[in-house]
Image (cartoon, rainbow, N blue to C red; front, side, top):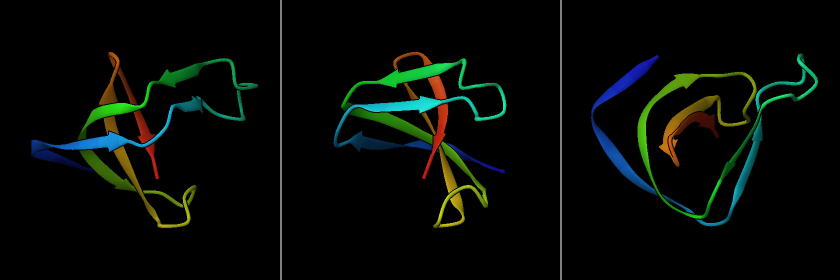
Length: 66
């Protein structure tokens, strides 16, 4: 995992709904609205096609996205 010294500004082009995981029957749901976000880091992930997941902070939530 790599945390950036200075967060990068990003922009979600549409609303995002993310589920915590399939393992726990998707009990935790994150609803992030379209708009500006902060990208605070990244890590390697086989879950995403790119192989890299970005760690974003938005709406008082921290989630990972491809």
